Length: 243
Image (cartoon, rainbow, N blue to C red):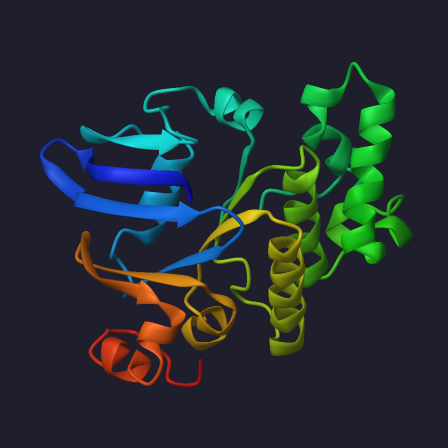
């Protein structure tokens, strides 16, 4: 059953130059959906549109059967969506706990819920509990990414949108992030993932969408892509075969 979908969306940054052209996709409840494609294909733009950071010129965003196109970002959060961008968003001079508390602002009037949310995050990332009094700038790159993801989890979202969560991370840290995403899916959280680490992202995916030049190229289940992933990506520019 689809929980979040984009229907024939067109998105432009500058005038009539469309970054996404008639793109459609859907994320099924409790699954990991990955969006892959060469650089400049519009993957990050699609995630931002799904979260309301960009409004499509045409088309619609549907969540739990309702058209939510045009809602404000804070309304998306209250509905049960969370978004972790590719760029670093931690506040370096605040402690880990202070960073997390900023992510729990919609729960601020219920201290019990805040504490339960923090315990929930620490159950996924014990290292954040250990370092909760340390300034965020002292964390490693991988730990900062855990902090960003943990902050997004404080509202226990139904849908988590992640843009390049393993970018610049060492392979072992990237593996930790993927293991976490599988665990989160097992707890019935729906995940929409953009990641250039195509092969590893593919391993945890349930369904794959390929974007090229701002348009849908191909799509299918993991089983349908088995054995032909290399063929799909062989012509992409800037693709690193070591991934």
